[in-house]
Amino acid sequence: MPREMAGRGVSPEEMKAVVVSYDMITAYGRGAGACWDGTMSGRTAVSHFDRFNTQAFQSSSAAIIRGLDYLREDSLVMQMMKQLFNGSAASIPGRSALILATTKGEIDLLERSLLTGQGEASGCNLNNLLQKVSRLAGIKGDGMVISAACASASAAVARAAAMIRSGKHDSVLVVACDSVTEFVYSGFSSLMALDKFAARPFDKNRRGLSLGEAAAYALLMSESRAGKEKRKTLGEIAGWGLSDDANHMTGPSRTGDGLALAITKAMKLAGTDEKDIGFISAHGTGTIYNDAMEIKSFNSVFREKKPVYSIKGGIGHTMGAAGLVEMIMALRALKEKTVPPTVNLEDIDDDATGWVSRRERSIGPDKKALLTNAGFSGINAALVLAP
Image 1 (cartoon, rainbow, N blue to C red):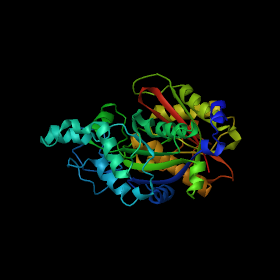
Image 2 (image 1 turned 120 degrees about the vertical axis):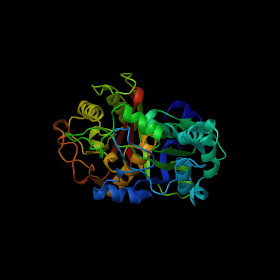
Image 3 (image 1 turned 180 degrees about the horizontal axis):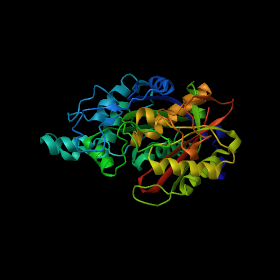
Image 4 (image 1 turned 60 degrees about the vertical axis):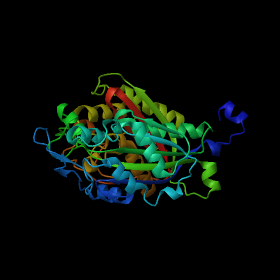
């Protein structure tokens, strides 16, 4: 225990950050169970969509949530949020701190203003979204936005765990969201980063990512408060690490050194040896360089190969929400002692052989999970999760 915490009479239980509740909505449907079942089935939710005209773009496929209305008064993410918090807010302490993770938030409000002349362009300000989410969740405490590209949600979870471990907070709500809009889609298409059909993470013939959308939340508490309130512990955020390799505005480092540093930091903070890691939930976008970089980082950290999987072949790349959705899925995998298959994986890349699989795999008891994410500008994030 850090000396300053001991001096303030903070116990190890109060410093430990545990997850006590979570929920999500993805292209597989509402709830973590729907996402888990869809992934385990090997069925992808990526398909052709007509939300906007994709004729000029590289692809016309994405993993979207059906039933959302585009360019309406309520943004796509707010439509997701209202479903997400319907009936859930009562279990969230009003004095919790709030962290919102997103890349573009309500960017479709800007599109609506420019394309239809309705609404205010300034409505897409992320602080406005933070206030809306705070009201939906019934939060009366502090709030902040973390927008760290596609590592936003995992960085937010790391921040939340650090706030609890410091003793400054005993309840933090992490909320993450992003949606498939024409603005976002055109950007990835201009980078030639989209697979024409559906992403194939770690496949020898991978051609790019598939965009997806999601909203999710996780309520973190100190173990002490969770015990006092008789909350069921769904997992622990045991360690975390962040780094930035500053390699390129959009391209990852080819060496994987930055991600390896984040992984090493997370494992050191968790007091975890490599033998304790049962599996790795990878960023696994399906782009040529990301997947290669991740395998290189894993090879540099681990002496023996670990089961690795990616869920992005199933629900697409949900951008700022990816890390939180993947954390929830990894906690479910720890509970089930089962490593999910990598959806759409057909011909395993030579470098990934022995790491990834088309099939589910079992893990032993008392194992921990490693989760990795990476984003534009070279940011890297890693979390170590314990059951």
